[in-house]
Amino acid sequence: MRAFITGLAGAALTQAERGFLREAQPWGLILFKRNVTEPSAVRRLVEDARAALGREAPVLVDQEGGRVQRLGPPHWSSYPPGAAYGAIYDRDREAGLAAARLGARLIAADLAPLGIDVDCLPLADVQSADASPAIGDRGYGATADKVAAIAGAVAQGLREGGVLPVLKHMPGHGRAAVDTHVSLPVVDADRATLEATDFAAFRPLAALPLGMTAHVVFRAIDPVAPATLSATIVRDVIRDSIGFKGLLMSDDISMGALSGSVAERSRAALAAGCDVVLHCNGEMAEMLAVAGAVPLLAGASAGRAAAALAAKRPAVPIELAAARAQFAGLMAGVWQPAPGYA
Image (cartoon, rainbow, N blue to C red; front, side, top):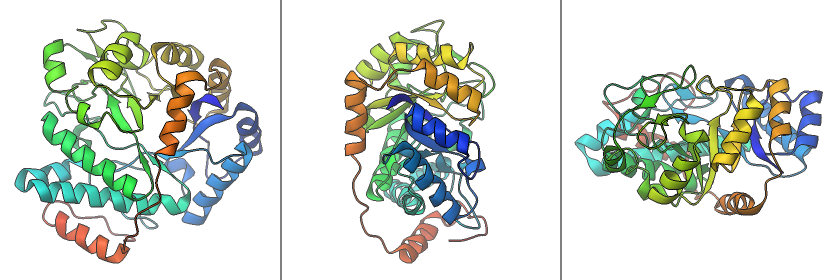
């Protein structure tokens, strides 16, 4: 296995992709809307990709709810943005946590039958009033304790459904004033403020098995490199201050926030301390470049990868119709699902 996660181009595996997966052996795969049509086709894509790899590789997706939902009606339910859980939490803490946990459990019930066993969720990004809308209503709130509590409930719900959570975006994306898909944000807050707010939201979640970095510069800690490419931030903040011990993946290495070729970015992310590189766009030339730049997954990174997959548990049984009715009741007055399958 090599130290990267790859995307795919479309809804069916091409012969070129089959050969690429067989030869390059990425640690895992990630799916996007372009890969999703109807349930049997998604299952077939996952099965074909794993057959090409010759193993049960992890398959990831960004299924948050709200604006970031790769599977939706008419075949799958729609889910609320994270801010909806925060709104309930402000009114009734226990109801907010119950809604977050149950929503994630229902998401897992959608993903697991497709063979998707990792969800890039929860976010522990503390919202900031002057930040880019890239996080916006995806976030759970503006205080570290609230965000950590809701994120923990989301992670619990996913794990109860047999799906592994990915904690993102470490050490915090909430202050980013520009969208990292387009350009590189620079945060000027002092370290004490960051430690007490942004970083603090991640500490109670440090035992989660998988995490993702942020393409954000924290000038008070490393004035040049974004967290993904900063050995100082990975070592001193993510690993030491936050205490995260799980498998650390980069955010999408092809995003506009980063400069240089995808090969250069990939090598820099691994040199900074990321265990694996995430490459999402499904463009074969870039996929080949990333595969050629990264090593075999070995040493401590291989140990963290194995431990992450070993953390997956069978789904706890759930009566879906009753659970969906309960979820609708919890969300009443806060969020109304789009028409479609439920």
